[in-house]
Image (cartoon, rainbow, N blue to C red; front, side, top):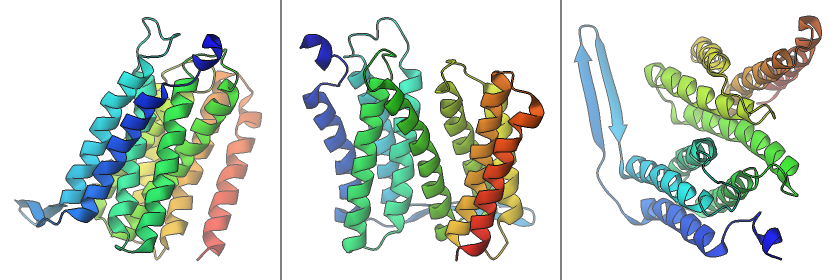
Length: 271
């Protein structure tokens, strides 16, 4: 019985962590505060970045997740002296990304629906990251596949939300580069080889950032924009895994080419 429970996190710790994160989201609807704008004036350029209470609480949620997930993972019987950094990356990004669409939703039923979906995603990521600490866990393969799928879904949610918000390009490009790089870094680390492939992660981030810059002024709907960027992320991650497995390049490029064709084709017809 003890061995069975060692694969799942302590219920009390998990409950405290999830409740703390969700409380920060709920406070954004209960507390009203003025908006502040950070501005930078240069010759011929004016940069403005709005700061709201929601922005601060989203950052607080990400910080709580990072520290809370470390606290949760360290209760794993199989952790030993291993670092917890790899298990903190995706949960922290998840809470940060969920805050973006929640800040855009109106204060009605749709916000609570988004809040509920976000809560389920957070719990799923926390549980999956705990399970993948031990490769011999019964649900290790499912948890690893789930984390990979959630990574792509979260990226699509973030890019779509950024498009809806009308963010300026000088903020969009670094945001896409950083998030794409971190997500691809975690995805590549989940491929079974436990590799931190920084060159591929940086390259994927640069490609997606360049694609986002090229599509920024196109008359695309948010979902079209999201699909157009998620396709390259998925395709290049597949290509990296194939190259690491020494698959011939002609075969390795086939799958990514199909993925880009399908996602960009879907983006053309979806409105």
